[in-house]
Amino acid sequence: MSKAGGMLRSLLKRAVFLLLALLGILALLRCPILKVERELPMESIRIVEAYPDRAFYRPGEKVRLLVYLTSELSRPVAIRLRATICFLVSEVCRIEHVITVQPGDQWHELLWDPPPQHPTGYGVDLQVLDRQGTTLSMASTSFDVLERWTQAPRYGFLTDFSPGRMQVEETMDWLIRYHINGLQFYDWMYRHEELLTSQEPYRDPLGRLLSRRTVEALIDAAHRRNIAAMPYTAIYGASVSFYKTHPDWALYKAGGRPIPFGENFLYIMDPSPDSPWTEHLLSEFSEVMQGTKFDGIHLDQYGDPKSGFDAQGEPVNLAEAIPAFINLTKDVVTSYKADATVVFNAVNNWPIETVAPAKQDLVYIEVWPPHTLYQDLWKVIVNAQRLGGGKLVVLAAYVEPARHRNVRLTDAVIFASGGYHIELGERNGMLADPYFPKYQQMSNELAAVVRRYYDFAVRYENVLAEGTWDTTEQQGANVFIEGVQTDPRLVYKKVWAVTRAGPGFETISLINLLGIANPEWSGLLVSDPPMQENLCVRYYTEERIRRVWLASPDLEMPSAVLLSFECKQDARPYVEFKVPKLIYWDLLVVEYGA
Image (cartoon, rainbow, N blue to C red; front, side, top):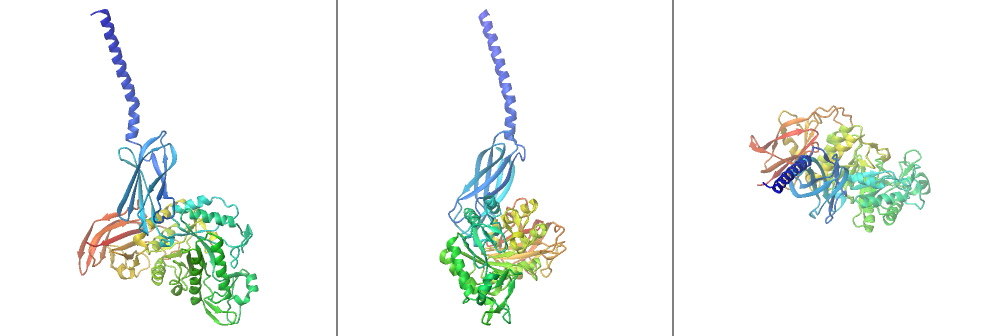
């Protein structure tokens, strides 16, 4: 071999060696990266929370879902973000984006054009997946499509109208996480008889410094999120000075004695249709509708008196005068805004027989003794639905958030009965007293539970509320659970079956009242009801069963699950199925048809 050929061969050997070495180094460098992309550590990327950007969506509006992610990795990584949108048990749409997640926290959004049908509640199940399809994190939320907020009235409250109020936007963003779509502006006014004033700022009758600019900022922020703004007013309250100026407008006890409310605070005026007081207050409502962006009028009463006499000594039947006042108010507000809302507080369910069918848009009831039992909440809701011709019902039932088990069970009963609960407002606030500024703060644990319940109520509103009717008295006794007491005559220490029906289906809400020490919704519960597992449920029905499915706000994911079932017969036909777990509330839906 020549000297030149030997040198060439040596150089080729060295080149091959260097190439192999370089490939080896590259392989070592690439392997960890490939491994991370193939097998990301569980919970290295997590969905912190997700919610829609509005309290509800009107037909034709685009849904915008906000998803908050956090990554514990030290570098960007590509993942798949998947949203499965469901109507009840059926998947409607699947949205999937490949996104690059940066280290730390970040927001992402998903857009969808829903069908225009309303009212319709949707569930959203979210997943973060790696490239191989392994689920790293899951979460859920919900939203609904409504023509107006009273089709699913998730009523909340505001009480802080101080000058320069901070966190207006943050408060509204907190409220839409719970899908609150109507807000009662409680004690926002200058005086009970003079709602607006040219003063800025101004002091209310209790000396609180308030601002019209703050009220307007809150209304605007609410409207940007499709939240209705409802101004609190009192149907017959007036200041002492106003009463003394207009004693012939007042309501009196027998013997011509005026009727005070509080100590040197208010006097009760005569709300009869032809009373000068009524004319005056309706004029105030006109000014509110012209001078503000409020969406109607919220009317309050004090529960007493229930009758009286006018200045001429003629008897006044308030059970007749109040619905007439409601109707006049509706006429006034709709003359300025066609879809304006009127709400009246039937304190302690009075006078529900006359006000439920009046021209208010929903039935609002503040609950007091003797309506103390969990079953009383159901009775009040169902009775109001019947009297109101199917109007939806909102209860003001005050439970201190420290009694978190009571809050959870109370919400379960109200939602299962097709009702809604005014309890949430401001930021992390929960009503604990009829004077709303005395609201209290929820713990983080309770806030998470309540949020799951509100998500659930939106997701399944089409089988819980709008368009459904109660059948508990007829069908509740047809629910039996093997080895568990379900007797409808018992007030607690049982699994209570609340049943409702709609076109082609029935719902069975199983409410766990086993082992609780107090049957009263405000009575302190010191422990959770014992969880039940593998319940064998028998439901007697003559209908042909198409399918049975279950969902619960107490489970990690609220997605509906189809249950296997058997149709059997003893003296009567029945369907039998197993419920895997009952914590507080399980929703079962029995669908009929071929």
